[in-house]
Amino acid sequence: MVKTTRIRAYEAKDTPELTRLFYETVRSVNRAEYSEEQVEAWAPEVPNAEGWHARMLDRRTLVVEEGGEAVGFAELEGNGHLDMFYLRKDAVGRGVGRLFYQAVEREARGRGLERIFTEASLTARRFFERRGFHALREQTVSRRKVAITNVAMEKRLPPCHGEGEQDVPLYNGQNMLSLRSSDPDRY
Image 1 (cartoon, rainbow, N blue to C red):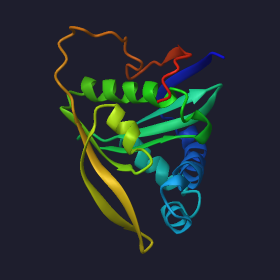
Image 2 (cartoon, rainbow, N blue to C red):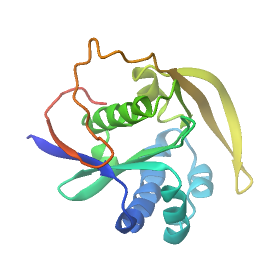
Image 3 (cartoon, one colour):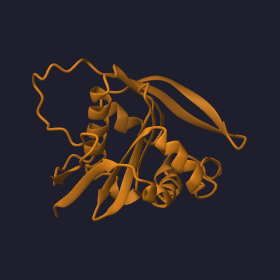
């Protein structure tokens, strides 16, 4: 079955859906690598929508949707820090993340960034490695006095000279592009 995937800029009306998506993703997708105590500390409840809205306005936040519903979001800071990259459980393993990451990287390149760096969950580590990221170190952070391991990762972005470009921009800052994907690449 062919699905239509749309990538667009974050809008204020997205906040309740994205806070719920974050909570449910941590509580479901991350259970394989993290304990019950850890996922509860990481996402004890659905975050406050007002606080998240203010945060998302201060960053370049993109949303990926299917059938008019958000299935993921990413926050890219001006220095190249990819603070969040979350996909809803039913979007994982269908190529949505791969397409969405390509849009995030195009955004970074369009801003002249030389690298993207993130603190990936153990769950997301392989996904980012497949996108060309290198692990710098494992680190432990504390959330509500519970130790949670993540991986500091980085990807250097070579300058684009227009040669060898195969993809058209997915997102140009104002408009979105619909993509049709039946790609068997699971990420």
